[in-house]
Every structure is written in structure tokens, then in C-alpha cells.
Length: 185
Image (cartoon, rainbow, N blue to C red; front, top):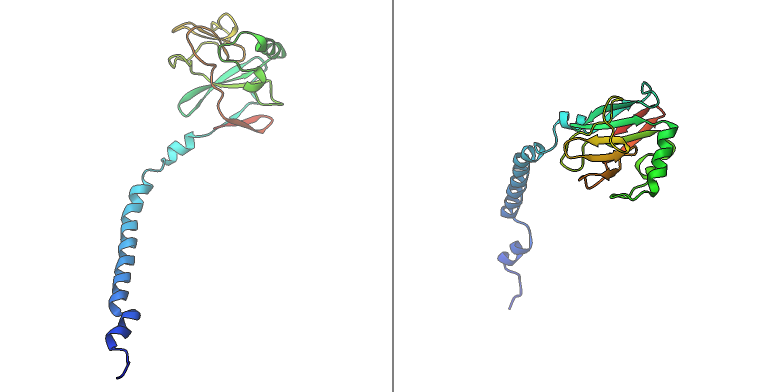
């Protein structure tokens, strides 16, 4: 008796032309599905105009001490105030006050740049824009910002002191690019 392998057993262990065709067809199918899916996935990325709004650079050099400006960032007003030494001292003195949303003045400004206060100018109660940016505006009982819609009073560091607002005016993410320029966002 001979123990020669049969030709069918030899072919089962080696790749055949049919195996190659299956693998090639599968690879083309994956590439084809990817080329169809990619535009659908890519269109979900933010548009260029939206990305442009994600950060805002502000030149602080024209802002005089005691002056405040409002800039737009992501469609929201941002209050930037060049604080006087008196305003800084008043804000630090209020650190020990009974605050609804406890935060020290140092937690609301960048170290080494205490004269600059940067906050999102939207009342945390119902989204109104508080008064207090102009010299002629009503600044509330704590000489900061006042939301006339429902009577929220903020101090000179933007902390809620009286009224229905639950939290302080938000401080956005920002960095100093140099001594006179900040980047918000």
C-alpha cells in the first residue's frame, strides 16, 4: 500500500486562485466603503468660519486704567476691565465676604496680571447682559455689574452678591500672549 497524498489534500493546504480572488474582492470592498463613508464623516467637522470664532485675540494696550471694553467671542460678550489699584484692593477685601459662589479674586484673574479682569458678560440667572461696562451704567450695590432684568448684583470681581443668579460671571479660558495681548479660547 502506498501512502502518497492525494492531490486534493495538497491543494487544501496551499492558497488557491479562489482564495486570492476572495481576499482581493474583500480589500476592494473595504476601500470602496471607506471612500463612500469618508465624505459623510468629514462633513461633520466644524466649518472654517466656526473654527475662526473659537479663539479671539485682544490688544489690551489702548485700554486705560479704570476702563472696560466688551469683545465678542463665540457669539458671547466678554467683559475686559483694566482695574485700578483701588478696585483690586476692594475685590481682595471682599474675598472674606459671605459669597454664594465662593471664589477669591486671585482665582478669577491670572497670576502676575491682576489688573486685568476677563469674564463672559452673561448673567448666570437667565442669560441677560449685565450693566456696568460704561461709566454711566448702574453698577449695583457692590460697584461691579448689575442685571436689571431680575436684580442680580455682582461685585468688582464679577462674583454674585445679591439676586437670583446662582453663580459668578464665568471666566473664560484665556492666556497672555505678551504683556498687551490676550488670546481668549
